Image (cartoon, rainbow, N blue to C red; front, side, top):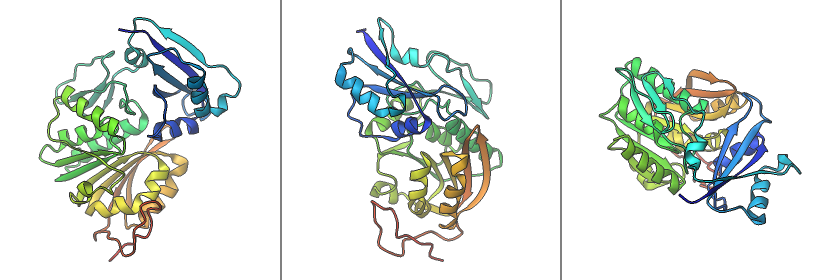
Length: 313
């Protein structure tokens, strides 16, 4: 294997969220953000992995992503004869949520009877399942199954690595499961993860939210999952509600507890009611139920503003 390089900069959680949400960064490196101090918004870390020594332009581009670092110089390391994916996964011990075990190649796990293990390595798409938002969604899905919920059609918006779509298919194997992401790389990663975990039948779509006809043509869905960020969750509330079947279950994650009120209000305006909350540190996972009536557009729809929708009862 050729030499690899890692550049490390301190950053804030806000900067980390912006990096994770961006899909158009013109940087030839794999970017990963890590919480350094639990529940501390100021102490996060940006690691950039690349296969060539970083030049001044690369360092400047990375510094622009973490302006809070100020004049502090980045840490630059040459990773001779080592796999950066393995290094990035050090310390990522297997997690267990309900009947699921999620692990990386560096930390294999043997599932107990009645559990399903998923191998999700760090890579070009966000999420290994170790973040509280993802593990919280796994716990919510498992709880739904234990309550006897049945779903015929499920969709995972912003699937990342495909983990939540895989979990939904495992719990409801007869369901038609769709996974979408705005980033084609994420869909490539999901396809590879599906093969690695012998998951078959998840429909994969590159799409901006629910705007792609392939998404709307498959609606309504009686299980809608969106583990993204609070801003998109709020702006996309009308379109997510519009693809939900009457009384559908909606799982939302990627928001902070301080953002919960705004997210809940956005979905309440679309006829959705709050059923359950799962706190993971200062992150919050929401479970809602869609209106008894299908949410439909009653005015012109503006894809940029994602507004102009109303509840038609």
